[in-house]
Length: 234
Image 1 (tube, rainbow, N blue to C red):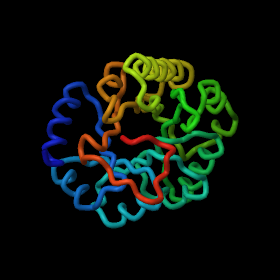
Image 2 (spheres, rainbow, N blue to C red):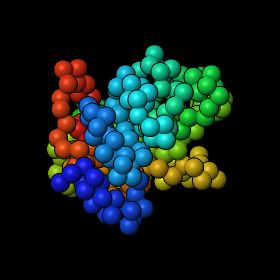
Image 3 (cartoon, one colour):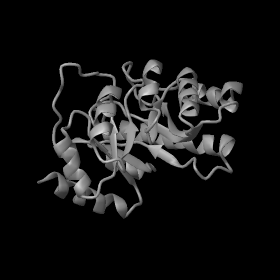
């Protein structure tokens, strides 16, 4: 099927349960992104800052760009002027850098705390206790230009349904605890980003509010020579 047809099928499934669809466009050419755009998709996710910044320059300005991959502090400045959501905040140091560059651009940047839920050593992300410590820190309390709107997690690669469901359940449970403890009166803290092409149905069952889907929309991705292996295929 075409990209447009794949999108239509996915949207009909996800819209019925009010789930946001992030089209993961990493390594995809502008033509593929534009086909999805013409079919009505406006939210796209990228893993690498350089690729993201270049695409943002060329493509329609009403696209909402999400950064999904690991973000180095020295690269925040390149996306701070335009990024819609940074899904991969995995340290207080990084969040402080985002806050600094958001202030320079007179913006408030929405972020998700990336939580390490996978049974793997290769994933980035905060432990449950680390996330709580971050939100309790005086440094976070002093920030004026970032807004934590939820959490993100990546399940163990090629795990069975039971383990994957349990990992998603743990993330949703953490989200609920953080909501009650730190964001009870904040309507904006509402996002649980979990689920990719291979496991999004399980993620939806466990309470996901946004899924990150690439290959189901665009087909299998091309592996570039600089491929970063820290985030599994969407």
